[in-house]
Image 1 (spheres, rainbow, N blue to C red):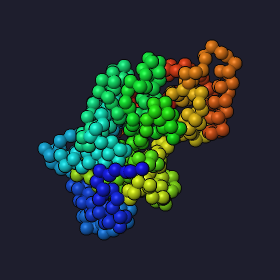
Image 2 (tube, rainbow, N blue to C red):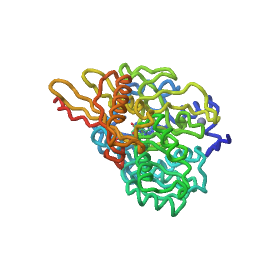
Image 3 (cartoon, rainbow, N blue to C red):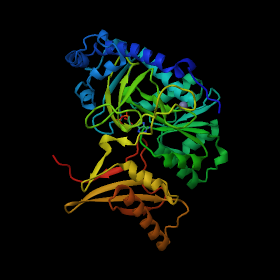
Image 4 (cartoon, rainbow, N blue to C red):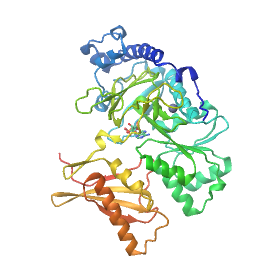
Length: 437
Ligand code: ADP
Ligand code: ZN
């Protein structure tokens, strides 16, 4: 395969040079950080009073971690490092796990961010000949404008469709010959279900690729989307604290996401002890943003679980790859004392051919015990009227999930399209248990 690079020099830079560049940029970022009230208070206590206190890349370990709560406490301007009149944009996180946090950008910050996104887009094989339908939420969420700008930078024709209204999405695809889309994986599965239900023929659209991200999904889900739609799906990872999309992305080798190490420093730590873990081991991803002066964030605990690949990539890029994010440390459900990640359930069921495109995990209190129910849509070839095969399928799904999480779930089967679909990030878990206060 012929791989294409947006910025060959930076993307294939030999590691020693790349690390020298990281050090230089880390020092700059520490200088930016010291202009914010938050880090001016936090860094000197750790012996970092100026950029000169960072002498090697290893010195990053002296910088205290920053958490989501720190960002909330610093709201609204505690992490602003430039005069307000130089800020040209703000974005906020989706608030999946609580109050959203705000990030500011200078004009230069937007340019740098866009550059990283363009690198991702081009690295999947897209060119100016492509027509890009951005089916993700615009607005405060970074996914919309982030990919939009990167797509334009590459020179693609960008259609800012946003999510929802599947009938209109198909019309746009047909009218303008869309070749690439960006969406959450759950929305892509929904699109496929609707396409089938409405009888939209695959030959009437020219789709080749999709960027899928913003929420965890399994390798089986990727393969399922690829097969159903006949396209290549590229995993896209980002978070507003690190600008948004464009932090890590799959290249055409589709085997792990390159973290752009000239713009971000990544570490994997043990989420309990916070000690660094060697490449290859799974832990919490900690990221430092080297490319944003307005809201500099260092050693941010993403709570996302991943690992660095140890092998170099076939594409020739030297930036290390991150393994598919399996979930967040705070996604973990405790069901009758057993730890369960929703991704374990997804992995178990999405590999089953008879399982359809959507599922929902429900937890309730039943007396003193927790009761886990997995609601599963069946595939389009399953007849809902035929009780015997349906019971057998339900039993098989139950056993598969139980083998994976050790808990015995209740399984409910639903018709295709019956379970709720979210326009933004999928809500896979409904936890109806009373909260301890
Ligand atoms: P929020 O934390 O409110 O959801 P963001 O909108 O900034 O804020 O979303 C960033 C988060 O979305 C990441 O920290 C991660 O948990 C999740 N995410 C983004 N892309 C992916 C991906 N490709 N795979 C798994 N999770 C992802
Ligand atoms: Zn690669």
